[in-house]
Amino acid sequence: MTNQIIRFFRTKIYVALFLLGFILCVGVLGYKMISDYNWVDALYMTVITMTTVGFGEVKPLDPASKIFTVFLIIGSVVIVGYALSIITEYILSKNNIEDLKYKKMQKQIDKLKNHVVICGYGRNGKQAVKKLLAYKKAFVVIEKNKEMESRLQADNVPYVIGNANEDEILLQAGIDRASNFISALPNDADNLFVVLSTRQINSRINIISRASNESSYDKLKFAGANNVILPDKIGGDHMASLVVIPGLMEFVDNLSIVGKSNINIEEVDVVKLYDSEVVRTIKDLDLRRRTGCNVIGYKNENGEYIVNPEADQKLHPKSKIIVLGRPEQIEALNSEFDIN
Image (cartoon, rainbow, N blue to C red; front, side, top):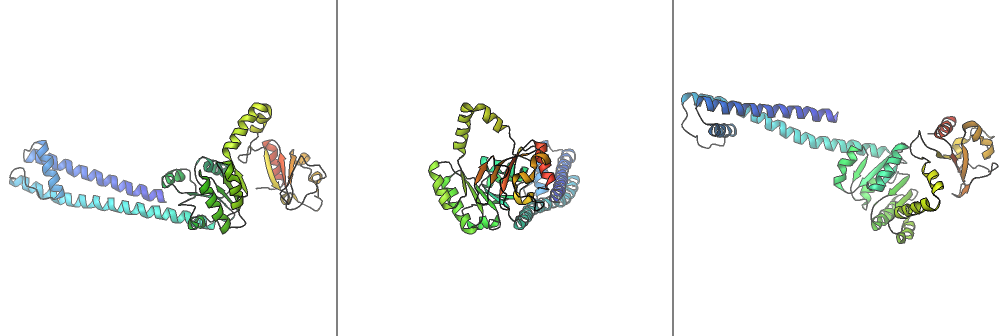
């Protein structure tokens, strides 16, 4: 609807510009033929007549030129007035349309619950958005740089423009209703302040923060971050691993965890796998036979991980399992247990 309104006004502007060009050509040709002016004088007379500025004539007009000038003034007043009204209406309407778009987007943000708030739309922020889009997770981006707004709009990303250091901006993004917060700012001090503010507003939210320096790790954890990611350290470790254990890293790199149609690893809440009282252990799930997937990890209710758990590992409602399989096997798992 918004694009249709904009196209409508643009069409009217094109019509107005065409009429202005048409009356200008008529005036120049008229003075050239009727008053025998040269091209420059004809253009000059046409412009001062259309704009009614009141400058003197190039030379006295004969009766025919005067009659032509009268009709040119009448036509110019109508067309110029129409053009000015259309341009003014377009400018005002464009501002109103932008305001409507912001209000509409804010209403959508206000309806979100248990969503993800991402602070910063730089390299790390964009990667986070890409992953969340692949998993169809609701999210909102907070970006301080106004110049990034056009890119956010092009990517069709819900956003709030403002400084995340201000509680009002965090609340505008629904931080009090969010389940996760990702602080991907390039400056550790900014991340520290934002993490602290977020934790004060929402004590239950899961906070993940970026850090550039290892010295900031403990500070961010103390401020309330559940996880602190050091992109440079991870990148360096990964490159070194490609030297030390290249085969293993190549295998890990080929494991896809992006999207819903080509993933190889899935984390599943155990409660989603209970279909009867019979399911008590990993063996009872019988995932290998039913879906082809293998259980490679178990996360108990205390958040502790067990790698390659035994078949008789007891399952608790608040625990999770990590399964490995080919994309079609993961899809079979999701279909078998109706996991969204």
